[in-house]
Length: 252
Image (tube, rainbow, N blue to C red; front, side, top):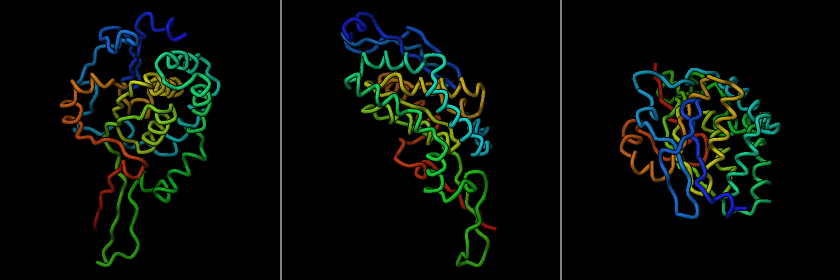
């Protein structure tokens, strides 16, 4: 099946702030595993610091509602996007098809309400610090201290050993309400894009859908590194939601 699929380049689409784009402007990969992508417009991959990101002031409860509905949408796959991503992924993934299919079957579980709320409670002891300022108890100075987990701007280097890595990255990133640029792994070119398309299908134009520009490949990342890292002042993603946020202290 892989030989038949790889006889011509496989199109790899990008999501840019809620919109899906597919094209064959750029060709990557070895002769037996070629894929095409649209041309990147680098200035469209970053957000101006002169204004807040799309979801900065969106309540976490609303973000969770969108993610939960996304999980249900993935389980139903009404538009066949999940099945299509699985078909395309089977041509480039080193995982056997049965293993890949089981991983895709688990994708909706990463968007369950209990899972998302547990993540917030475990790392932040509640969503109040994401939506506003939390007063710190009994500071030694005797003054009032408040902190807030402010939405970040991050470039994520996604692992490609399993599709669940993309699901965790997107779900946890959405909870931070920040803006996120995803770099696709060469052995998982389709999961992240499909998940972002799912969010855009569930909530077209929603701030969460607009907080992710399209994923880009390694070659494009090398060419655009100065722009992506310089313009957005981002860092590589690390495990856990808390490490993706900067809690800025406020003293009164």
